[in-house]
Length: 169
Image (tube, rainbow, N blue to C red; front, top):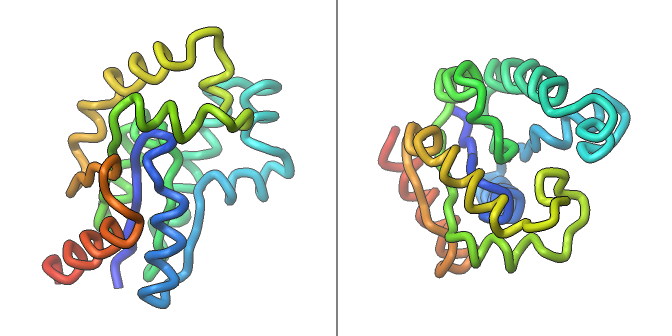
């Protein structure tokens, strides 16, 4: 079975949806960020702080390439995975890529209490969210499908993904 890949900005529900989806379909859940942290033996925040975003994106690309060679995974891909074109190509090579979206107010509400979001540890996180979403929007649009999670329950999003996967067989 092809992989099911969830992409989208932080706070759109990728981790919650991916774990629920994997459980429902009896597939293995994998987080690219989790794999990076295991490989590097440190947190994403520490990697960003000590090595910078370019280094992080390089490790992320290696992890994405390795996961794309496997089958039957539900992959929770980091929010910026689309920045490098080869990542999306690799993920699409053996998977259905679904972008989860939400508006900036929903994202702000979902992420404001977490300090482990290195890109939002700035003076004006809402402006940073708006800027990053605008910058990434054309990249997210290249995914196979998009689902706005802002007004849906987790169950509703999972059901939509199950329908997408069933119709793509």
